[in-house]
Image (cartoon, rainbow, N blue to C red; front, side, top):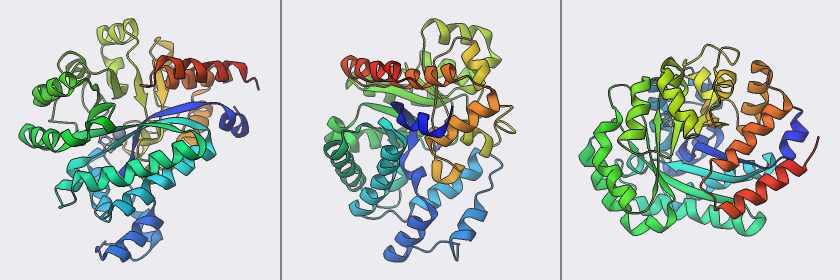
Length: 333
Ligand code: HPA
Ligand SMILES: [Zn+2]
């Protein structure tokens, strides 16, 4: 598919960490403003540091990078820059993760992050009609107790959230560690999403489904190692939010050619493509879609199916889904 056509097609992004949209330029600018010391002299040094051998390598720099975010205005600027990118790329709806514990652990209250992020979301909605959901995630390398405390801190802000997620270091931190806190999340009427089967085994996807009752699986690419799991994901059409550039940068796959996007689609699964942490992984949504389609040999109708899946798998109301799906199917290239 050509880039101009892709830009014009309505699409949703469902796996995007707002802290992972922190471009090196803004990172250095905020570091100078807020007097936060970073181990980089200039933008080239920041970019040169983005060579990751694993998820943990990335996370170490990701948490360091977010330390420059100090004020509500900083969170606003960060979010606004991403939303402008959505406008340019024809993303009509975005479901945005943020990591409360990545901020509270360094003395920045959840209210500061939420204030800045939601101000930018409201402005994009009023200026060009972009819709968004905000999804706080628990950091799985921290304790259950820490997640429970964070859940309490989020209580005054629940009306801003559609779902709660689970992210950070996967291996050694299976979903069962967070069964009780996600029971509270569901009792509060929120949806559940969880990173699973990125670096971790297929059993973590079972855990996310059966114990956390996840509505969607973030990444999930290792599901193909378990035929019974694939049957379950297919039968229930549980969406997978796959992030091709992320998977290559974090060495889950060697390159886009060896990614399993096409195999997941051929297995009848509800696959969506997403950018995860685009400032760190080398590209935003449309570049992920275009380069993955080329590398995997996807036809234009398969690309359209991925975009339709992104709308269907979103947490938008049915009427909004129907509106976007109608616009997608009426646009011909
Ligand atoms: O891809 C990811 N996996 C786990 N945690 C994360 N936090 C930001 N990005 C990621
Ligand atoms: Zn992610």
